[in-house]
Image (cartoon, rainbow, N blue to C red):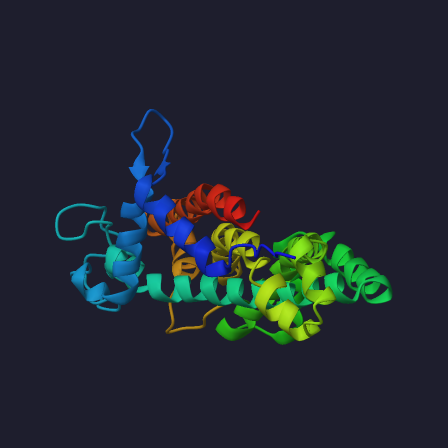
Length: 295
């Protein structure tokens, strides 16, 4: 009796990498403007996170007498109310913004995957209890659920990442459960049971690797949403506290001077929007390749 093993998560990632190299999506800006290649957006963002000094000309906290100066030569994105260069603050805030999005996505994906695995493998009573709890949590918008969690835990970067991650976990749980149920009934799993393979071996070597493909796609798409939720909580003052700065904090700092100067708020808002759209575009483009390999 032959048993055909489904492609592993490594093969799914290889297919995703080939898809990115062969055709990179482009991000439409609307309003008659041309499109922006997503690869360029992601490359600049990663460079700003890793080596911000290569892009920023000024120190992020350096003040000057040129307060609320409009964008122009010397200050690409203008200055804020204290004379600080907006572009430099935006570049130096990239790392923390990405860490918030990545941390929240990792927590949500890990917790959701464990819940989905437990519901799909144990079934019956465990499945019913876990899925009913998941459905109750999914009745709340993610941002509202994150607000409820951070109200209990208190403000701060770590608590904000935890709250956004918990708010996104139910979506991962439902996808993981559905995939586990589909893989558990596949022929190669039934063949393994007949051959006497241990349940742990089947889960770790067969069921889990063939469940990760859709979850990786969902995590890529969900990264943008997690970053937006993190920026929203930072805007409300529930995220990083001074002197730490992320894009949401820049939005909050510039709102008081919005009638006098639009640039301290507009550029961080555009950065959040463009990056979230770019990551979402990559996730949607990779979705067909990864899911197709996992079938």
